[in-house]
Length: 163
Image (cartoon, rainbow, N blue to C red):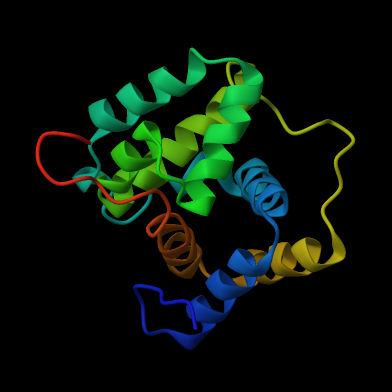
């Protein structure tokens, strides 16, 4: 069983279902959720005041300077916990800062600074079902699902001065 940070079985069920999707479906689901609820996700998220905006923005700035193919690979690497420098930097962030980073990625997709989901992309039936289920959750539960989903992503930092 994949662990989540909350003991709520509903949250755990949604996070585990999300993680069972393939990487690109996970990314697409995150985008569709952002499109539906993005305006309220991060700015109003409980604990948003504990986020480190400058750190999230610094990591986002590194990503947006890369080619679109590299941007997509970084997102896949984060989900797959690949041992890359950016993944280790991300892995060292607090969960709320990680949520802010994904919000910045979605904003970048919206404004064209980050590779977008193809306009004709459709969610798989499993992704669509999960999307519909997440939409029925209360706001606090949605934020907890997002935080529990993005929290374990990324690679662990290396000991010493090396990230």
